[in-house]
Length: 308
Length: 308
Image (cartoon, rainbow over all chains, first blue to last red; front, side, top):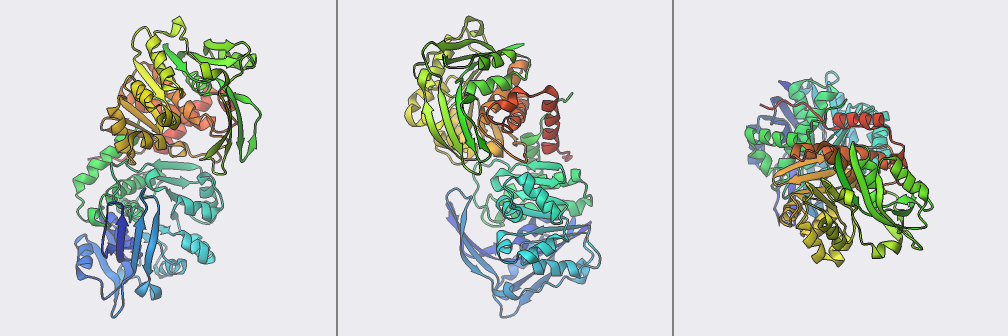
């Protein structure tokens, strides 16, 4: 059973979509990553920080999914990171209404001894210096260092971002961010530029338009499963990343062909995430539902043209 | 060798992209459809109309590709349909600068006797009544009636469009048009609505984001091949349709599994079309280039997750 270290936010989200709205519910990148990774035979631990306003039942929920939460620091008298957002009618755009960093403002991740030899490390979207400080705590170089980031860090801490990019194996990033980071409109050229910054593999997430995996001249594409209705896209990108690293940590095989499978597993799990508010769907997900939908992915993408 | 009837425009295009501009060059939906279909073992004939300003060399070019041009009427003293457009920097949007219908304004397609028993009929984007008049000229119902249309006809001749939709097998349409025609944002729901209007199959074209094939509850997706540079998108949708119907006419197999292959062949040929201005790349295309790129499509989309 592979060991997977996940570093990222565990937080409160309040979400408004055309279909409804929530009060403060469980959210945060590490939450979605962890819940997706927990679908695989993997020893996953989260490093994060919350305030003492964070409900014990949310932590219990993660533990029930066999996620190690010993690395989630609870700051007494502190308040948990809170994000509130509202989606536009087509769900492809959203406005951030509230961002309260709270305890995240002083977050200094401390990796528990048990996870300092993790084979796979998933660095969720955080300040690049914080991401780098996690790498520095590892006993030996992990087999796979995967990093997620966003345009905010390109705008405000580009030098730090470039420093941590030089040390990782795989960058996951959305299409607009890939264009911003590389200065290239073509995603093929953007991925080549980003390869040059360090990552051997680049995963470009295109939301409802799927995800691309680049490795030198090789490229693989997984569509998003066409759904009757996307209810709430919150966490879909992190769920994708969690399925991706969870599958890789469980299989212990980092070949390009197996990375393809990891992209499919990530896309598959993300297709569930968007069906309900926040992580609700992910917490009730059954193994047979996951496998049935993998069948649908095969039907969706596989063909049998005989070549030459 | 299957017989394929193609009805649509043969025209002059003038194109401006961020990479350059052309004077009047060969264009028109039927031109792109024909050149793509000609990649397969098929007896393809075009029904269209041009003026006597249309260069003989363009007609010769189509004939050299074994496309039957006996159904292209040449109106003495008439001028050929002319479209001029300019693409935005990201090539996903374009402005129409000039549309001169010319001889197209009075176009009454006359299907040559030889093609009145064609197994496959591709009705390119034209007034729905004109498309219907072609169906009425067929000796017996073709095995496959495929129709392309656009938002202009939904805005101005919706009743006529609904009439012809009730008679066809496959509608090819882009994502925005599918949403407009169905009143549904979700493409899954849009396809279901359009099924209800007549077509057993709905192909939704998403440009650089690939194409979806719907049939009742079944769905198949083909990505667009990620390219370093898209030079000129003009004709890509028609090239896709031409590859799709050309392959189906040649294979004589209209099963859903073979329609999947047809979608891949269409996407494959469209990936060449966008590499040069207008139909330039399609006229020089070699069989081995087409097959090499089919290999790339397999690499891009095929994976080997073992299920249960």
